[in-house]
Amino acid sequence: MKKMKLCTYQQNGERFLGVSVEEGIVNVKKALENQPQEGIPIRLEELLLSDGTNLLESLKQYISNLSLSNQSHLLLNEEDVDFETPIANPEKIICVGLNYQRHADETGSPYPEVPILFNKFNNTLTSHRSEIAVPKVTDQMDYEVELAVIVGKEMKDVPEDRALDYVFGYSTANDLSARDLQTRTPQWLLGKTCDDFSPIGPFVVTSDEIKDPQTLDLKTTVNGEVRQDSNTSDMIFSCKSILSYISRHMTLKPGDIILTGTPEGVALGMPEDKREFLKPGDEVTVEIEKLGSLTNTFVEAK
Image (cartoon, rainbow, N blue to C red; front, top):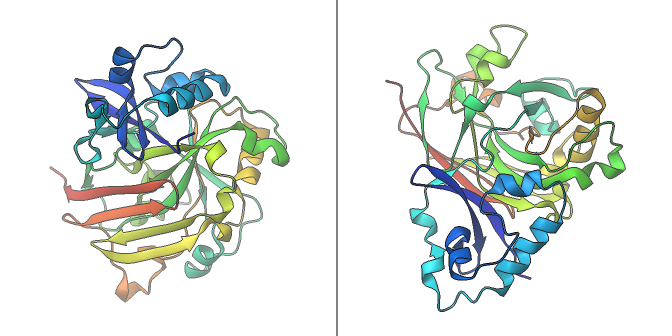
């Protein structure tokens, strides 16, 4: 069966499912017009709402059976795709602070005894290649590459050893942060929830293709310069422990997004006289092994 990554793209104001394979990105809607088959989703949300693996397996089998070598009209050119955020309206976006040992070290913070949780809202979601305005209210905008976990089944009181069974997939995210707003009060929310502060995507890799989420390399480059270069093995709380912990306190729903923390190398972790916060004109790429790269350019707010 072909290795594949899922994405959501926009066409004529509608969101559709794309499947990235070796030959390119399959336009599932057009493929179904050409080769009809019952039960194949054309939107990623349909997979999430199916609450099981049957629909996903049907999709994978359908894509594997497509003969793409002579059907280029079924393929989208990745460079031309108008990517959207993979999930449009998650009920919850929950983030974990100070979850990498070396990131805690660089900020002079003690290792937390339990996960530090905060939330973002849907206004922060944006996509690969979107332009992001640097808010006028901050001059300390920072980058944070993060592994995003997308919940696939309703979770409540799930033990750690079963928590990853509830994961639909993983994606690349950038938890943008306005440090001056974040540290203005004990609550971090204001510095984390400005518009477009959660670019995510462009791809989702389903959990069956990521055997161990604690072995993935992460990297951030700003204008081509590597700023973060680490591995999810440095997490203080693993993905399964985070999911289990959250599920003991609230019910997680399909499509909920969990941002699992960032490694060392953020601007805030540098000596004060060497901190290089983001400014209009900067281009930031965050990438995670097996999941893909997410690039955004930063512009001046109007």
